[in-house]
Length: 118
Image (cartoon, rainbow, N blue to C red; front, side):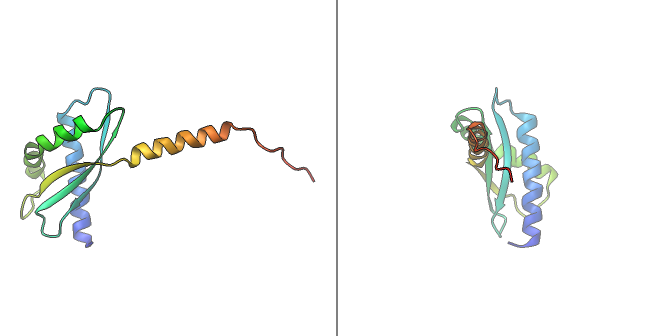
């Protein structure tokens, strides 16, 4: 991936995140934009959404239904040759990360072998 495309992806991630946090209410769910992947021709973009605190489907449905309005708001602040069509996908890495942290905390509570003294 080119350096320019990396910069565009990061800029879009920040702007989409800003729109999603400012304009939507998620009622007890934590919704974050973890990554954006725009195609080389800037026509399409995958937006990876991390969702904690419940079923991700209603959030993804709402974001994909409103993708045109989100694109419009983002493109008022980010000027590109063409406006990419955004599609939102669930990023389960946050959930897996929380599960791993919980598992590590459980392992830490298990009895430990006594330390050897020399």
